[in-house]
Image 1 (cartoon, rainbow, N blue to C red):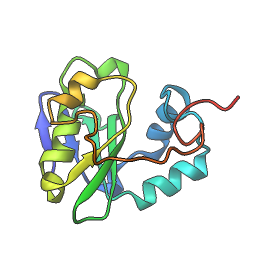
Image 2 (cartoon, rainbow, N blue to C red; image 1 turned 120 degrees about the vertical axis):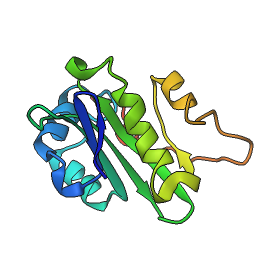
Image 3 (cartoon, rainbow, N blue to C red; image 1 turned 30 degrees about the vertical axis):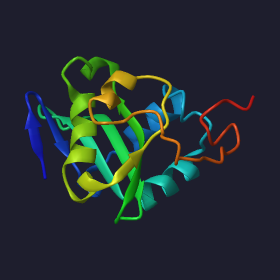
Image 4 (cartoon, rainbow, N blue to C red; image 1 turned 135 degrees about the horizontal axis):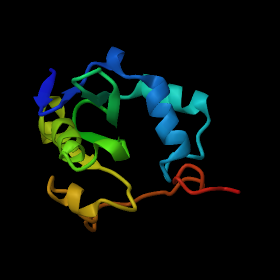
Length: 149
């Protein structure tokens, strides 16, 4: 499913994901991911329903990522969406979310996510505060992406 967008390519091939590159960003720059240890990340990646990577066409380097967990039928949870600072400003974040939620088998799912930023980006794809039917049992501080130290 490679999609070319200017100097970048988006692809949902799991084998193409540069695990070291994703781990480098999530473990050092992502406020929501610093609590994880590498084995946590590896397990999350292994059981993800879908992954989408953004790559520079020039050299194939991974510059963005998104993953989802799902039952494969009715709902999905969007997680770990990022674009490296040097690749921002080219619409890659928007394309990662669009490809994830509007293309493929998940286009009719109920999608969920937790984020402390980029609300405008997600609103473009119909994400909004939950309705009266949505309940949640929060996890530990670490699982919610907050530092436990």
